Image 1: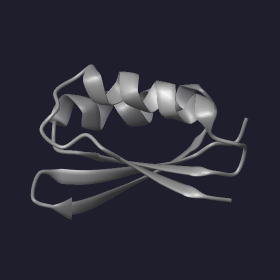
Image 2: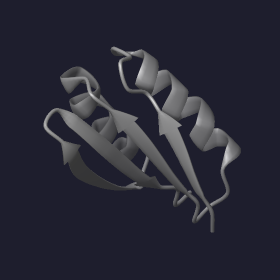
Image 3: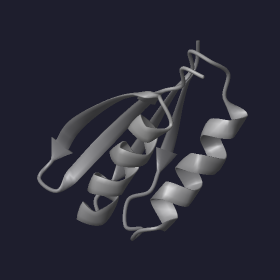
Image 4: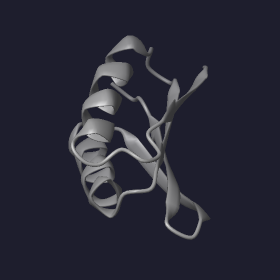
Length: 75
């Protein structure tokens, strides 16, 4: 299992979502993608997309208005 960080700070939707979609395709099952975001639209869309795809999702607030979306690839 590996962890990959994706820095999307300062990027508005749909850029973080597109980057996450592309990056998760490169990962193996069990790998974890950590997407760093600071845009409220991405905060809603990214976890929604990942859960719909069947991945495990956790959200951690790192700072005021900054989050890490932790996506474990399960399929």
